[in-house]
Length: 246
Length: 246
Image (cartoon, rainbow over all chains, first blue to last red; front, top):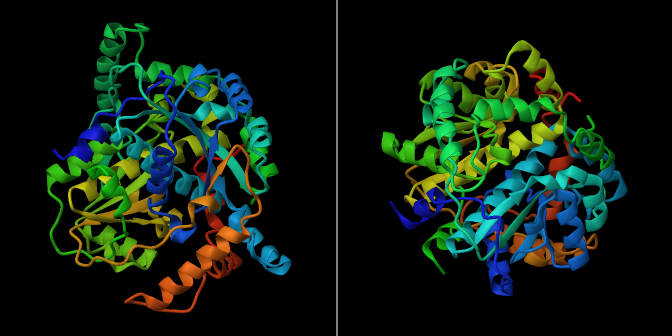
């Protein structure tokens, strides 16, 4: 196994960091690696924000409910961005572009582009011995995050990424068995066996782990999670920003 | 610079492969690495398809207009998947889950989860000396790809990924300068300078490259691309599959 695959397989989300800030060089390398990810038809349809302003970080920590959004080596926010492509366009050209800017296809394109970049950044960070964690909970109040970052039309914040020097090394969380997530040629709707197997593993994992031990299975956890409507306002926000409208 | 960052920075999309197929072990490692990527609230909201059926590959090559979709070491298709979470749910529970399954938030969650996994898989492949290329053009006919893979409700194909032994090593494509894509604390709407700089670079790149030399800039290319409405049917397809409906 090579070093890179070892890094990939060793991943765990880090939620506790020392006070050490990332250096300018480290930030530069993470962004550089992020940018070298593949991008749909060369669109580079994303923007990476770095948040250093302490007041903004404090408010983001409050929105996400996570103190490590404030206390970390560096806080990134990855945005889907279809503004950049219009900067040099005339008004007539902008009108011609709007059907694509506003459709679901390009919401997907920009979300995919941002995520490819983010994951390259995450791996670059981990390969340097840093730890990281994605922060989907910035979407707890997506409109306020939009205001904080002063985002124009056709740009939406997708998720944060905290990076820093790890203060702890949590256990790795098991994954669904490969036969439950990788199918050849045809989708396999009967996933009961793989999910039972996974639930047994997860039950043992939750009972045995050193912190926050509990009785639970993955399927129960998912059913509970999905049963409470959450972030229903993301729909409206995205449309108000001129994306996913048609 | 460590080996992993070198791999990330050396990326170029490979569109021409030898006849050598990936081994079972290579496919296993790519999927294993993919699964170890971060996942939103442990949802693992994606499925990875491997396409080995020659007839399906031929039709996918025709849909995408790319012969390397047929001729490669292995063809993956990454799908956003919110079906799995309902497999063990009762009908009453399914009813309670539907508001989340159907909202834009969870279309984003599943697209992001699938993409994080894919990029881990891509990097694992590249670290083994393999080449890869994403195939967004499976969305040229998303409904037909859905049929070919026999996908249930709440699962949509996002993009393909071809992997194989590279037959050529194309030039790297430059990226937007860091100051045009990475902003601290506040979004910078005035991107003219960075884009001018990038356009000059791209002009030189297109004029000088060994294959398909042409006169073009990035901003012109984007304006042209966005001016022709494309894949407008993705919206309807996604909604017919029960996603992004509210």
